[in-house]
Length: 276
Length: 290
Image (cartoon, rainbow over all chains, first blue to last red; front, side, top):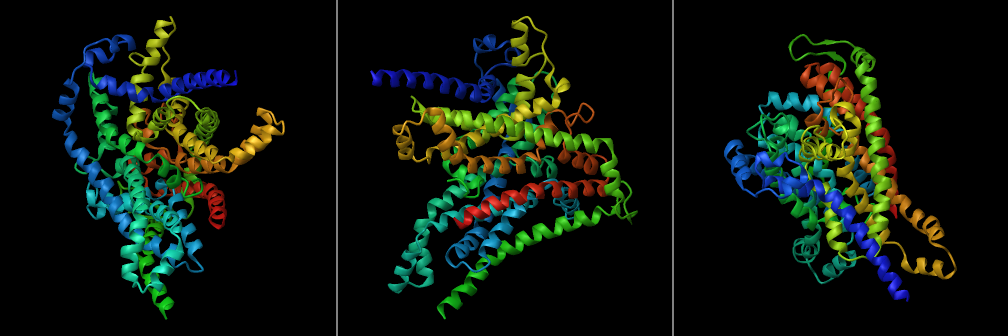
């Protein structure tokens, strides 16, 4: 009897959860569907859209007309480049704060976090002028620099919370066995730290890929990543739903897949370790 | 000896990150502060003069400032209400046992990974467009007049779009918190005769309080500077109906070339964000000790 009741309950929860999940996911599902329709069909009523013919035409059009490839590579270079540089700077910093904490380590961490609280618009004007004067507007180098700096605090923090969980006794044991600092890092710490570094990397690639303030302000065409490329569809000419959908699908697909792998790290990274 | 050695090494490893962040914080912010006291227009180079607080005076006294300020607050509060309440309900639902938990979780989280320009354009065109949008199709099939969301309710429409992006974040964090709830404590309370409501109020809510605070504070930091969603949907309009502080500063400095006024606005935005930041830092700082 109790078993049956709980099964009914489970069925009700299942239906409710699936309906809400579907509703939330629907806009994404819809652009995936529209991307495979012709422009004429894409603006019809939802049911007509569903039963119209499928085509790859929009994908061809987007590739041919707007140089999608360049924007895609810009996104890859900007997000991966800024993440790798940030990691190179942050790993030693987080390592030293986690394993050789000083009196001011906590203050230092809080201060790093506080730089993240500064709204981007507060430094928009000087950044724009600096970029203009140094000829960095619409250059990938300049933007990689900015993205590195805005994500550096998150990278340091995430790495710190991961490194903090590596037990210090292991280091002591290694030291007792006569391991040097170098072999300590190489053979003891690195294997334990790799998962944390990997999740930090994943989350930061996602954040940099979707960053849409600086990428919109500081690029126009040459260095423009996918955020800017999609924004160029905001003033369309003629029929464009299917093409916008195809372009959008291509812009979000890689990160959607990466994102699903990093759900757990997302919570930790974005709450600076406050929720695990 | 060894410790002195490793301390020096630690400082060396720390310094690049510290120096870079220090420069990043001081140089541009210092420049913004400096510009905010100048009469400085990009169309009239070489004419910069020191004007004291005049830029602040004009920035605050333009009608657009007050509507931008109230729009910023409405946007933040509106999105917070929807995402926190919706997030709690959704997290409670997803925490129940049901078939296909993993898949539904993936579906619910997905909007968070969609880049802001994509979600804004998709909502603008495929859903809210008064002719071809899905909402218009639904309205027509019910015999109603289609509603032009972005011209008649621009701010509410943007709130809806941004809330769709942030609901997954709130849900995911609250769900993570729920799953760390002590099951034995729950069962003990149930055995002692506590009803569903009592268990929720006395066990679940106190357990969630901290995560809710974290969600509110972190979202506020991001929501204060919503930009791309406004740029591609309404351009802050009609008039200033959907202009927030970030967009106003952008318009003033890069569309009107008023560097001085824009800088003053930037400093005001920094001050506003700092008020929120102080609370957030306290929360996280406490957690660091625990």
